Length: 332
Image 1 (tube, rainbow, N blue to C red):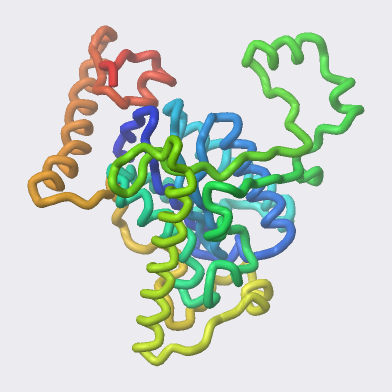
Image 2 (cartoon, helix red, strand yellow; image 1 turned 120 degrees about the vertical axis):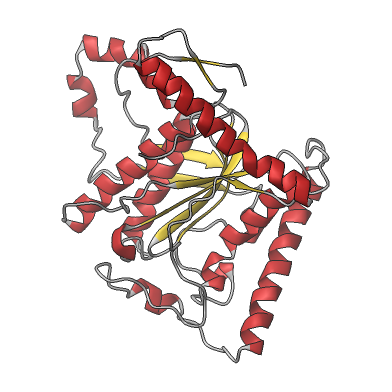
């Protein structure tokens, strides 16, 4: 059984998901950009997510998001479900687009970890040996100069999300009433726009409110340092060539991608971390122990709940049992 996720409103996460069998279903192309950017912007806007950084690699995605409303599971369900259905229509294929392993959502607990993962996301194509810099990547990415100032503006892919005037006119009064009350699916916007947000804090822990320019400088600096480190490491290893934009566009979506002196282009292995942060030893042990405490408390409450004790309180951060089964939880 999949371990329950601890969902607390206001947390920042690095969200990652790879395609099934690491196939290049997300290779840079107009249709992939159209679908991924619209479904990302639509899901983020619908569930109140603040997007800090993103990259769509040929066979996986990385997102750094803030979850003000505690709706990360709904956001991911909307994003990965809609993108899979739309891209399957575009490719004229069936089956799963995304790997059967659920998405990874790593809680970024410290300011350092937030800035590090933003840089990690932006520099992913370079670290994988695809292109020399983020600016050269032909796929969907939040480039360094766009962090905190850019936005995603995406048009609805009409080949899948049909919502023309004739359809809207044909909606019954009951359907419209349900949509207004949140009980149905409201019409999708023809165009969605969401900004790229800034972290809430600077690396030293100070609030970014009133210090937005300083925050943008910090983001550019951490990306620049990361890029320099990657390029120096490649130079020392004698790696001088890159796969390049043209080769990326020409990748076969039915095959996994090649690498050229880079890291794996998709996450591998069975590890699925839930927290990230830089601590002294005792602090790290304290923080790493927290998910275990949550899981144990959740398991105990689940046994009682299934046994008929509907008044049992689940630990703070319990999501599915509360949202789906009507259980109660401690306040966060």
